[in-house]
Length: 398
Ligand code: GAF
Image (cartoon, rainbow, N blue to C red; front, top):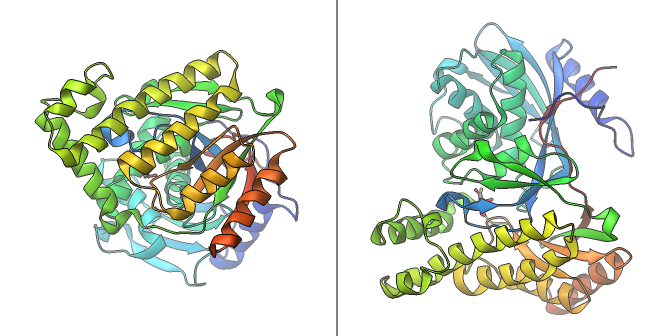
């Protein structure tokens, strides 16, 4: 987690002031503070986190802002600028898995997870306002969770380290919202720093490292192409993949697939039932792609990530089978138009594609992807240029 940083401004006014003003109107008093938590894209290392493996996410400039005020009566009141206008009013003592549905399950789940872990937390009034696109595979739910985790950490004086806050947020998603995700998204939202990618070892998140991810200085840009195909990680496909990996690890006598090296892979694959072979091959080669990407970044060669991204996409498409026609088309059109590399990012079955491009090629690549989607009859994608941004933090006051 980062310390307090500068105020949060956008082009059309001040988001931080707006969120505090809305809080005052909704709850009749000033908030105790305003916190921000970002969405993420993962550069490489997909479906590795729940195999105790490696990942390399960056935080996005897009954030969820949270204006919050502690309460002494045990009530938890939640409102979102992106919601239906209603305030959800809950009793912290009555929070239980399944008791809250919809977006409110994510923030409420964090309060539940903190209490369940024995932390002395009570109620609060919370108002959210987010620029993280929802349903785009950019971790809008992790941003919601992590905003609550850092705000509660301050409001209740918990002083928990960033990886512990990420674990609490993951527990909220697994145990309360019912989504069996790994820890990558929450670690990215809490622990990323501006200008860097987070080298995550999901077995020991405490040992994460910041790796300089220099785009501007190397004449590069990173595009995020939202295919506008949404997918719910809670719908069973993700859980089935995770179960397949766990079964393979058990059959191989391993704690997790992370413990299988590329050298041991051919023999291990011979010992597995056919349906598990491509899953294991993806996880092992993907872990190696993270290691290779980190080496290239440490050498200062950001452009060398290009082919690693594209190979990673092929592995997700052909072995892990979590891509879809739209993500495959976005990757293909971006690379054909001169992107150095491209891949789907996040859980898959839709969501977003990232493309690494030379500065000045953004319009050509974005235009080619848009034209390809038009020709294929797909909904047109939304395309953003992003930079590696800071993780969750309390925003400063004037
Ligand atoms: C989703 C999950 F939430 C992450 O934990 C991770 O498994 C990812 O899919 C795939 O790498 O974002």
